[in-house]
Length: 67
Image 1 (tube, rainbow, N blue to C red):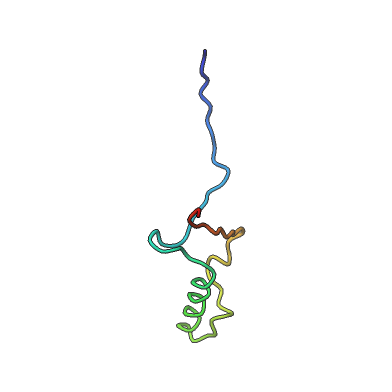
Image 2: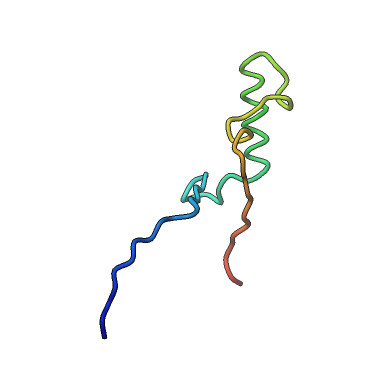
């Protein structure tokens, strides 16, 4: 049998945000960070734009123990 070497290119890059010890960064944590950022800038937090809001594509994944 003859083997041919093929160069592969990644199509996607997945970046996970959160702590490896905690459950991660869920919606409530993200909202709390948004409000805090806004309040520290003497604004209301709900209208504050986070850097992650400017990403062209964002997805959420729920993971847990397989019970």
